[in-house]
Image (tube, rainbow, N blue to C red):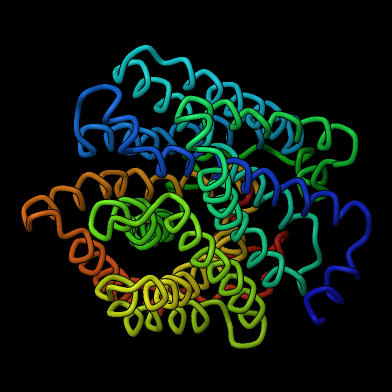
Length: 412
């Protein structure tokens, strides 16, 4: 009830910005995770193996920093709202184009282009909503907003379970054009960020100027987000393949387990995002990350679907619980004048460094005779410890006033 009470206190402008940002990230993730469920099907059609197809996932992730940079710079110059609409339309159309790929090479190229567009959405959406909602609501809104990612994964799991046997992998990509409809909602209901409107009259500060004067902070955030991206992608991207190849579960069972995992992710994000307003951003992240260590045996080493479902649920409570604090944490760390670029670009640079995760894990599994569970467990354990350490030694930013934010660089 506290969640709904806090959301009900937002005014129309704040609710519209929140809904648009949440749906944008949800549908962005939905389009990305459709690919995760069809790796084996794509490999079979093009006569190759899963490891070769994971290159498409790697390039999708690798292109995201460029998209975050380009769209972020545009959002800092022209506003969050119009650039968000362009970005959503672009990634939706590229998802549709993937359905018509005549070869694996073309599909990989289209997924790389999709990654460019996908990279822009998170930073713009997060800055739009964090600059619009009151400071007291940032933790809760952050937790819900980030779990748009988990909700998108959940939607992809539902579509896979219900439709894959009927429409195939190409049909899955056709369904992925649906996010384009969000543009109409943004155009009709969303207003520009009040913070951006206030700051646009001030002298402009370039991203490079800001990074140069805050290089320690920027380096820290990129390293932190590298660990975070290994943590999330290392527990998600090959999990359906683990269930398919190692446990030989049907599409329906794989879909159900993915849904259970993402229900846990949503619960974790909301819970830890909310408590970060009381215990602080750092403490919430550390607790969430270390909780994941306890879940590894249930999540990756069990054999029955019920125990695996329990492990998947609580592992994603951990992973996305930690992630649920990140939209607020990164926006509070960011210099004011480049908030459209700084959080998203740092996040996606970390994503770029971690972009080879699926390929690395597939290689580890192959060397151990197809033991995907071992590959998943190794990455999850390492990243949980690294995230806890990096967060504990970093700055606390809860409730910072954006006009006087951490790392603010005055105009020259």
